[in-house]
Structure formats: C-alpha cells, structure tokens
Amino acid sequence: MSQTQIELSEQQLQRIAKAIADPQRFAILACIAQSDEIPCKQLVSEFSITQATISHHLKELVAAELIHLRRVGQLAILSCRREICEAYTQVLSQRLIEPGKIR
Image (cartoon, rainbow, N blue to C red; front, side, top):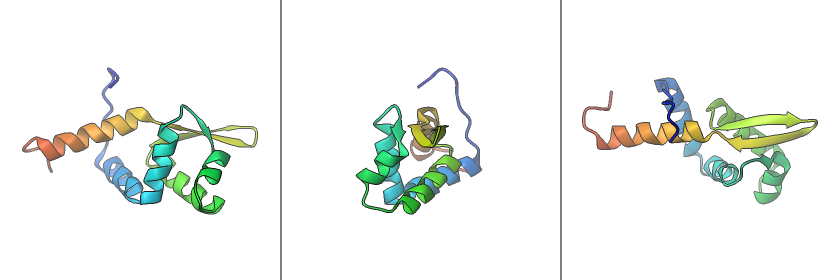
C-alpha cells in the first residue's frame, strides 16, 4: 500500500459495500482492475449486458470512487482507483479481525 493513508468515511464504506455487492458490478470492477486503463466500449463487448446497464454500473462504481473515468474525445477511458480499493480492504480486514474496531 502507498505511504499515504486514505481515510474513508462511514458513508464511503457503505457506498463501496453496496457497489461491490452486485455480482455484475464486481465483475466489471475486476475487469477494469486487471488493466491500467480500459475503454468503456471494451467492457460492452466483454459482458453480455447492454450499454445502458454497463453505464448504470459504471455510474455506481464512480460514485463509490472505485474507478476513475476520463474522456478522450468521445471515448470513455476507465481505470481502477487502487488506493481506494486498498483502503477499503484494509478497513474491512481491521473490522473483521481486530476486536473493538466495529462501531
């Protein structure tokens, strides 16, 4: 993990949990995480769901701050925000393993 510690609010933690609870959304996040960057169009071809559904899932992942979306002309380029994923897994691990960490 990077040297900068990222603090996630309770609201962020809940939003992330909700975002990755959906199996398709989790699969999309995993696909994005396997690449440095991936064009949105590639996701549409890799998953047997409509562009509208992909867009909905991406909106939720962006809102949870798990992915970054940047535009290059008309292309949407996606990348995983690994620092947020790492911060989430660290908090989750601490709360499940260390006594007294649950609020």
